[in-house]
Each structure stands twice: as C-alpha cells, then as structure tokens.
Image 1 (cartoon, rainbow, N blue to C red):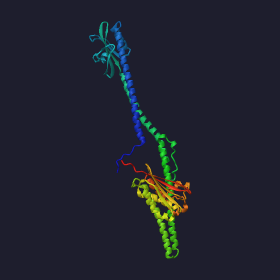
Image 2: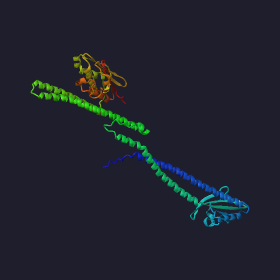
Image 3: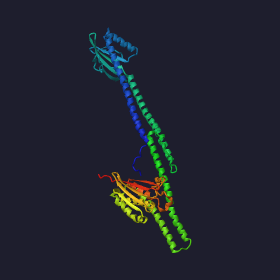
Image 4: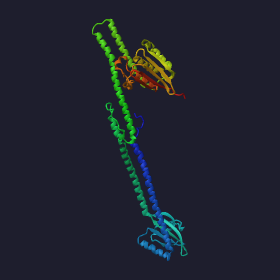
Length: 465
C-alpha cells in the first residue's frame, strides 16, 4: 500500500527544470525584442519611403507641366514594370488628373485616409486581392488649384518577410529551448559527476577498510564540506570500531578469568573426596568470583543505560558538602582500619541527580582508598562559581604514569596490571559517563609518587524564566 508520500526529485532533474525555463525565458525575451525591433524598423522605413514618395509626387505636381508630366512619368514607370507605388492625383472636384494604370482596379479613391496638409501625410494599411498596401494621402496647392495626392505602397513582399521572419524566430526559439535542455542535462551530469565518484569511494568503505578517506582537495569547492564531513564521520567510526574491538577483547578477558577460576576450583574439588571445610572453601571462592562477575555485569548495564538515558536524568539542586560527607561516612570504617585521613573542604550547591552523583563520588573514593597506602590522606574539595560546581578528589597515593593518563577513563583499562584482581577497570569509566550525562566534564592529574587529583565539573542550574 502506498504511503502517499511523493519521492523527492533528483538534483539533476531540479537543475534541468530550473535552467531550461530560465534559459527559454531569456532566449524568448531576446529573440522577441529582436523581432520587434526588426519589424518596427522595417515598418518605419516603409512609412518613411511612403512619405518620401508623396513628397516627390507633390514636387512633380508643382513643377512646370504639373499633371501632364506626372501622367507621363506614371505611364513610363508602369510600362517598365516598376510599380511598387501606385499614384493617383485628384483635383478639387475629386476627378483623377493623373493615375497609375492598375490603381483603379486595386485601390479606389474612397479607401484612402483623410488627407492632411504638408508636411504630414495620413497613412493606413489596406489589404485587397491578396496584397497588402500602405495608403497615404496629402492635400497640396499647385498652379492655383487644390489637389489630393493618393499613394498606395505595395507591402506584400514585406508582409511575406515578416511571416517568414516570425517562423524563423519561432524555430530558433524552439531549437533554443531544446538546446538549453540539452546543455542543462550535459552541464548537470558533468557537475554531478564528482558525486558519483564520491559514492563509489564510499561504497568501498567497510568494517575492515575504515582507514580509507575522501580527499577534499580533489572535489569542487561546493562538495569539499561534504567530503570533510564524511572523513570526520569515518574517523569517528574507525575510532568507535577500534574501541569496540578493544572493549570486546577486554570484556572477554575479564569474564574469562573468574569463570576459569570457578571452573578450575570446581574441577580440582571433584578429583577426590574432600572434607566439608574444603568444599566450603571452594564454595566461598566461587561465590566471591560470582560477586565479581555480578559487579562487572552491573557496571556494564549501568554504562549502557547511562548512554541511552540522556535527557532523562532527574536533576535537582542539593548541598554538595552534605552529599560528600555522607559518602565519606560510608567508608569511615575502612579508613579507620587503615588509618586513612579523609576530609571535605569548601562548600557549594550541585545541580545533578543525587544518586548518580553519590555513585560517581563513591567510585572515586573507593579507587583512591585502593591505591593510597596505609596512613595516607584523601581530601575532597568543593567550590562553586557562576558556571557551576567543581569537585576534586585528591589523594597522596602512588600516582599514575603520564603514558597511562589518556586512557584511564577507558573501560577495563588499568594502569597497573599486577593489581588486576583488585578491580574491574570500570570505575573511572562510570564516573566519566555520569558526569557527561549531566553535561559536565572530568579531568585527571597525576604523577608517580605525587598522588592523583580527579576533578569533576557539574554545570549550574539554568536560570528560571
């Protein structure tokens, strides 16, 4: 069943549909203007020639011999076959005193416009017997008498020229439209050819070929931002695939170790009958390994949910110092046993989810306790400004080498592999996920023998509207 949603037009089709009418409009305007200028110029020349003929007849009429000389001239022109103009001269009683032989059959005297006096001459078009005439008339005084000059200009050839020229203009216009469409298609195809090349390049990209790139300098300027965006996307994908592969390998290693321990101890216990205390020890060890597996799974589930829970965090403003002291009180027994000094300095309000904040801080405190020697110190400072709140967890433990700092927030990464049994390598990853979930940031500073400082930055609450 059709969804009723029209498919989007291709870029090539849109360009052709835009370019062709625009080119046709410009071509039509240009050719139309040319046609109008040519026809108007020809018409103006014909009218000027008609007036010149009328003025020439007037001059002949005023010359010596007047009508007699004019009659002889008209007969001579007619005998020579040069009868483009038909002339008639009427006296004041409207009787013809001189006339071209064929004029009485083609153009009668009463179809001429009302004559005007010199220097202007009235003119109009008249069609008869398949011919087109321009008619002009003028009154003139000669030899003490008034005469009316009537001249008919044969414009049949001019009309045929106008028709042929209009057909030529229409043919050029139609041909120009088709040519414009062809040019538009050709130019569009050539212009979009880099897209096809880019498509072929991107089709070669696969999970094992994420290192390939689309060099931006090889593409037109308009497509360079697209190529750059694709390259950046491929870099992100390559980084994500690398991290995912490393995460899968680390996860397999972390899960394999406790499972191997449980299986090994069970198989050893079954090799021969054992005392109840020995079976109890095996069970206790298995339970401990199961607890470790459960912790790993819980942390992974939390990370997965945190990444999908953006915008669903229940933030509220609470007393930061009180929340920090509550977390420290939870680890007070361990601190007393190891003679650790834990304290909180400063004050401020925090805009975050209280439970998530407590979990992030607990992970940092637990991590610090694990690596601080007996009798050491853990200090938590809190400060607030207009941008937000800053919490720093400072310990005087062994510290972390500089080459490990860029990766300490990666999942399952541990700077000291010899202490792999003491944690899952997910604590700092959880802290980073929680802080970023609140739109904040996390940073770490450390040096061997100088301790470690982890700084959390939570943004302040938005101003009420």
